[in-house]
Image (tube, rainbow, N blue to C red; front, side):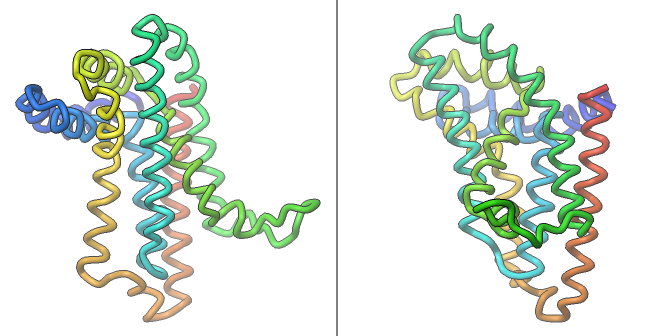
Length: 242
């Protein structure tokens, strides 16, 4: 299964990879295009499709959740920025320590997508509160939830992403006067597919289009999106857990 994702990744990333190295003399552009390559890395491919499914569905059913999307992307940027700061301050020695955690974190993404998919389908319904915490919107639709989702998706490193960030980007970071900014630009690049899809939904006036027609159709669309996330989560789990 990983080989399949890897083949798709190589097919999509080839032209962008060449473009990225064409801008190696301009670190800001190099970091952005390298982020685009990272967006189609095997581990990020399922994460990006999942994010597009989640926020694309919300945009079609209701309206574009710009703040949720911004916080999701901010979560990604914060992770890359902090990792970059750590390497920038401590040097390459820290790589060996960090790499031990990424395989474990990567394995949690599949089950997380399955849970989100089941919630969207309606298998899990949080209509009751536990203690002082009310679960309905605070877990599923909260702003902090969008931020943490971005964080968790970003920590899903695989060998390809590790090479792109730590082996390819970080030497440029360490040798550039404003290198501390480059990991954040890389993070924006990894978010570009999501931004593009949401922008197209907004630009063509499709925001809330389904809700305008029928709430029933909107509910069906949400269930279909949940089903897609469930399938992605199952394939992701089969790829990285077994």
